[in-house]
Image (cartoon, rainbow, N blue to C red; front, top):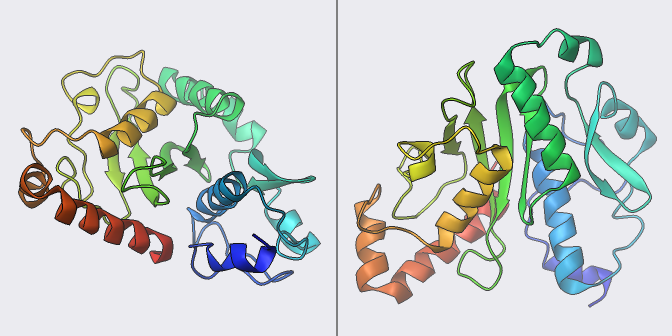
Length: 244
């Protein structure tokens, strides 16, 4: 597949033109996560070389995205960076919860599980943005699902509040994006970190529990009409490509 045909299968809306200004992170906090993972996903799936112009990041954009910074992922030969906590600010974060979140973030960078990514919002380590890819060879395959994780100073003794920002259709996900998952409730343990949370949610997509429904319509459809359920899921996947 050449670069043109690959781009035609690149389901991410409003990709920047080569050399154009990138959206600001403050106005589009999920842009770096979703953009990088969509690129890496298709590169892996299609084993194709994108045109060098498509991967161009202007020097102006690179400088704007680079300070203060932490690298979450990279393009060939050039890292893509997003604003994060300046070192001086990080030094002031001495509470146990904040120290633990810094360790979680470092671990997520060094050994990222397949198909997930997460990072704190700029200057707020207690609020994270995350992206989960739908697992391969399932109705969720190709989906780019955005979430937020809100932590308190009780972390890791208490779980974060996790919500999908992307619209979802799933037996265990409420209309407001809240997730009915045992490790986020009565089965929580301080040993779970951000990577474990996101991996568990990714697994939940393909292995729902219709006996404990948060969405009764999805639960009934999953049990009684799997073909229609899968069709609805594919609609959600397509919407995830274009949703803000």
